[in-house]
Length: 70
Image (cartoon, rainbow, N blue to C red; front, side, top):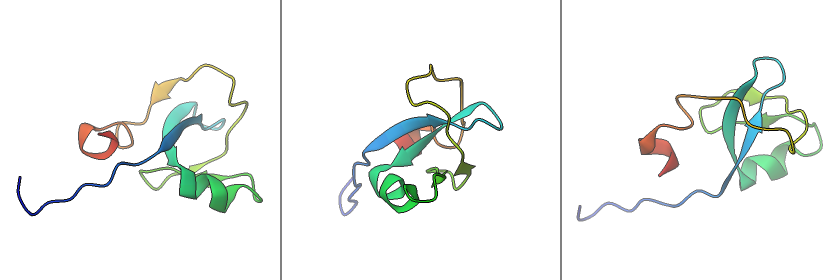
């Protein structure tokens, strides 16, 4: 496609402990939410993460859609 620039996002997977849904969170959102301990996923959901070493759970459909994550 000409005239279209798509930026690559650097993301980390975080599972919300309330819903057990795994969201993708950008590096910028991690930096912004670090002090409060909650983060905003690519889809806009507020993520309250547990251990980042825990296995991922059910992926968020919006965060993991090809249009967003690729």
